[in-house]
Image (cartoon, rainbow over all chains, first blue to last red; front, top):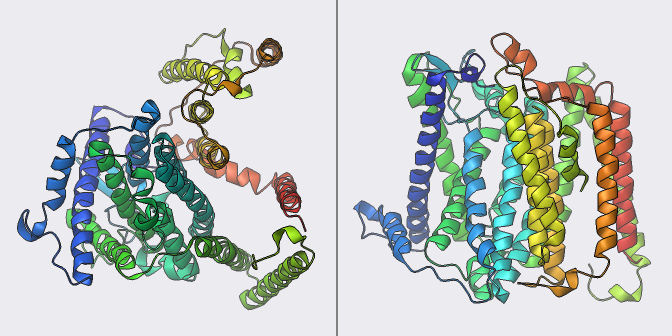
Length: 399
Length: 192
């Protein structure tokens, strides 16, 4: 709960909230602009090319130039399109991407018992647009709402390739959402709260969830997050060689720009969520400093440094990993990530209970591992006896 | 359908009291009217994907109503489960089989009068039950200030304590029921 809103709400409080909204909006847009440039430049480096280098120093204004170009292009819509849904879809993609960023803490001093509270114009507040009780669930909800944008864009285009792309996107995003949610649940067990502020606060002093949850949830989240973003190596949604451009094949001008913006915005916010959940967000050593420097400069510095690492990682993935085949994609999601995330979730929950009730952690771990092993063996047995008794209908292939 | 009919119970109420009650009730009426309209469009629209889209609006209206009741967790769960999973699967199923653009004539048939009669009957029954139970109750939207803020605004924590405390056994029974349904679906789908 934001301390700003816990007392009486007057004009000053409303103005501070408005200021935070405007700053977050502008910062995200500028961040996305720079991210597009960063990605193009970095991929060019990795592919031994120059990349954009004409507009502005090092080509940094290239995105702006592209944006202006797209803004002035003619809006085309296919003859078969469903006019209203065709126009609605880009917004359904863009708005959830914006909303997620509202719960990300981007600065604040988390050392000692500051809890990330900063003083702005004499009022105590948090450096995030909102800190609802449901916190991280908003992120999961918005990532499932974002499916609609892609799905309806493909359907309403009235063309085959976009429809194929959107069906692929839906099944992929729905499949990986489960793994994503389960790895977030592991973090929630350790943090003991849904609020993003409290999740970050619990990680202050180097108690990062990365190791508090034992690394596995982070790996699962990173892979599932990449799939959720439809970025390479999971970009079957817009596989150029197969589907022309996937769900946005028929889109031009400003509507295409919105999809493009949403995609990169999701990359930035997903990195920010990873930093918040696993790497302690804006928390870090404050060197005994206090006041505005520790609140704004240090906090934002730590956040931005961590964010940059993951932005680099996503670009790195794109430049180096070949695209998965569709059956590999489904196997990875359903047969590896979900069981792994679920098993790890149970083990972490068992350890948490053991610590809370002062049982012997080693014994609990042993019993949990034995239980999981037994369950896994039973499942294996069930699958084997199932495939032995399978009717002729499914013979051929080992699926 | 039921969600769309719920607003009728509050038809006869007066909104008085402290400052946040009136806006909450006004918002409720707007959302309720919109939900009724969207629910009617779900069954009258001539395109199956449009029907699913109107259904999304009805279900988000339910989520908004939970927000007006200050139950954030239930509201976000409504969004996550109904919008994020169920309608997505509806649409996915429609698109995998057939999803015609434009008008589809086979969405209607000559059973319309019977359907209207059943709908009206259900409306009457539910409205009667709700009005008998709640009468003239109106929404109260409490604002918490000062030391109340922490205690009053922690409904998510309260809900968690309730589910994993006194209500643990019913919760587990429901989980087992859902697991049984899941296994049943697999058994039906796999022809072993």
